[in-house]
Length: 194
Image (cartoon, rainbow, N blue to C red; front, side):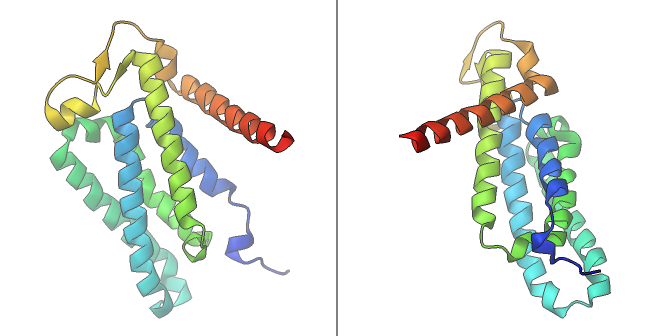
């Protein structure tokens, strides 16, 4: 049986792991920004360290090395967040730990050997920030209610009573993500027809 190169494999697991933090941690702009910045930092450091270690590793030890490095970097980032913004650390919960799992899956799928890494990180960031902004504005009728106080010690950028609470829940996140994807497809479909 001919084995495919890791780059040619289906990346369904990789994309499904991105979906959990995308929906779960994007109920506010602060959480979305924080998790995206932590993801970019940890994954970038992981990729840099593995590029040095990978050529020197015995193939049988690559997985354990990958696991240990990802856990170490994610743990350090979580400790830094806990020391700097404890409330955001509590709010993000398990999603910070998923960064380590994402690193290992990306390594297994050959992500760090692909030239399109920056584009995918930007796309993930754009989706995180868009969903975080939309879900906070629609769901809480405020902007920056958890991010600005953690940084500056005052209220959000704007605030009002009300909001559609459904947008801050996971089903609301799925609905908004579906609407964003549909809008992107409609936009590209309209521009191609002209």
